Length: 328
Ligand code: FES
Ligand SMILES: [Fe+2]
Image (cartoon, rainbow, N blue to C red; front, side, top):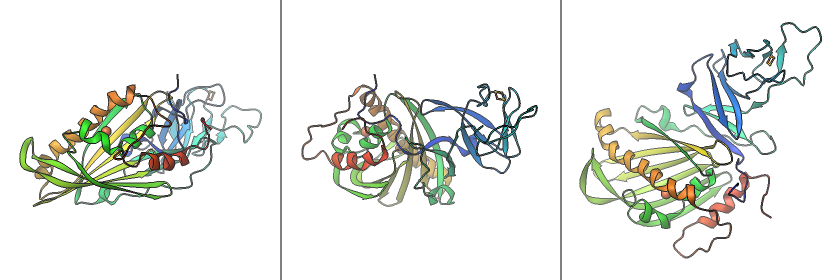
């Protein structure tokens, strides 16, 4: 049974692949938003996403379909579709194909080495974009690792967890010891949660002396793109950005990809050694949350107390991503 008082698939941009997973002319089969999809890169270098099945007799274009120039050809009877999904050729047709003969196409963007699609409950066009992050292209930053999780949850639950400060010292003691202060800023579809926990430093896996003050700026662009900017300023200036991409698979499961980007400290090797434990700790935070997320219920009207942080404010912000209401 569906568990949430809001739709499983919010409006907004959601990751479906990383750029390096899709070479030119490649086709990938996907399953997100409860649908079979096909992702392909045309000769002009652009990625496109269609619903997978042909409007003719229903073949899946991800199994044997071909990219031809900037078009995609169905493997079953050779119907050919342009990058907007419009049928542009039927090799044997003796009658004209109507303009209504289309593959259902999704708004697709490639930004920060990531391919994202726009979901809207009523099929409306995007009204905002995911901005470029300078860390992806800067020689001062290194993309060190990507990790993927699949879990029984909802993108909003993952996002809410970043503001739920009361659970952090309980569940994630290894990463955040005590939260000194926190603040939330909201600008339309963007939310920033700033908090200042204490952090245990490591070099490789070796624990280093005293705990240090660090700052976390968690920046949300909708519910499909969350970046946690972690900064430790001690003798050296350490910067780590973890970008989380929660994407709904269906009404029950989501996939979450994490990308770890670290500011270079002297050399690549030193940076990697410094990052080892930090990355392990952040991976552990997700692994610690998963059994809670998978088995909790969503309290629409929770009993909150002082010290619970900005959960109400977050939920009000998140409600803008549902253009359909399930609970009055
Ligand atoms: S099913 Fe695609 S061309 Fe016939
Ligand atoms: Fe958590």
